[in-house]
Image 1 (cartoon, rainbow, N blue to C red):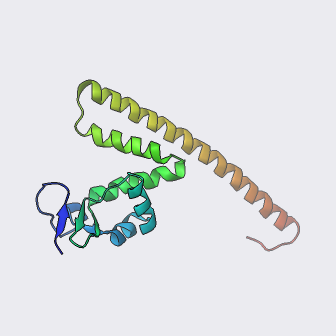
Image 2 (cartoon, helix red, strand yellow):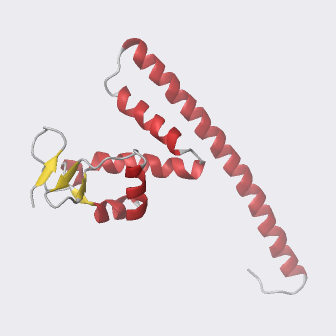
Image 3 (cartoon, rainbow, N blue to C red):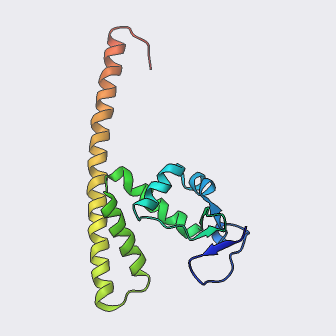
Amino acid sequence: MAPTSRDTGPEQDASGPANGRLMQIGEAAERVGLSIRTIRHYEEAGLIVPSARSEGGFRLYTAPDLDRLAVVKRMKPLGFTLDEMRDLLAVLDALDTATGTDRTELLDRLAMFHTAATTRVTALRDQLTTAEGFADTIRDKLHHHGGPTL
């Protein structure tokens, strides 16, 4: 089945994702480490749109689509909402062609996302330190009372 692309770019090379090869959703899911269901959810939420569809209607993804999914995947554990993810993706998309004042405003928004991400990473590190301390306390109790050594 020949793919139908939403853009009018050159024909896709089939040698690999970096060269524009189109992948069905299962391969895309495997490569980016997300489930097919999650990718479909992100499509429904407007975060990702497959670059093409086969004549049979199968979603077809390119390496840039996978890069976009990777951004979303990395935002998820930091607690960003779907709206925030959508906003960041829009900023990243617009930066490629923005100039002048528009570019400055986009860079300011990107800086705000960086600050938010850094703040959330710090909070996660604090939570991890607390969790590790708790696990150490339990291990010490086990050791003190003759339980199995871990």
